[in-house]
Length: 230
Ligand code: SF4
Image (tube, rainbow, N blue to C red):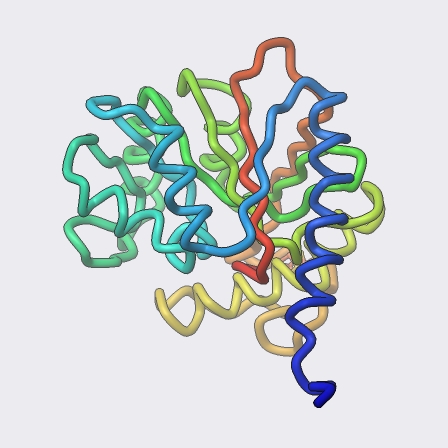
């Protein structure tokens, strides 16, 4: 019997091809990368990339929660974990911006840095937008090593699509997350779903960083063959 409803095989084939093109692009930009078909294998890969006894800082990333990476590192208990919004199994959101800044500065001194990505172009450029800048700062400066984990939904054709993805998908969803889950004031996009290039005090897209290339192989990327994060 032909099973038309199940598209796992076609998707698996397509995601592998898409990820391979993206990994080739990243390699041309001196950014090593790995493809993992699912969250379980991605989590195992990240745990393998992070040696025991190093400190690990985190950028705020739904992908890292969804892929079980934070829980996996906590469980193995041999790294000092520095997360801006998570401690001992509890997610919390600091009341003041000052607290986030303080923690963010501490995290820049970590040995390793783990984060997600808003978009990765097929020719290997990593694009991230931040409200405060702590996450993009950690990616380009500070920790000795950086591991970026990204679901297949983050791969885009070019920088134009990357920036469009941030304004039409990532930012509205993330603003809504902060509003619903962390009590932050709404933004226009978290109310209507549409970006109006606002001047809201809660604006979450203030700083955009594009990693085009790197001089050493400090940043590594783990691409996951499933949808993760925003
Ligand atoms: S600029 Fe404002 S409205 Fe547009 S995506 Fe960012 S937070 Fe939302």
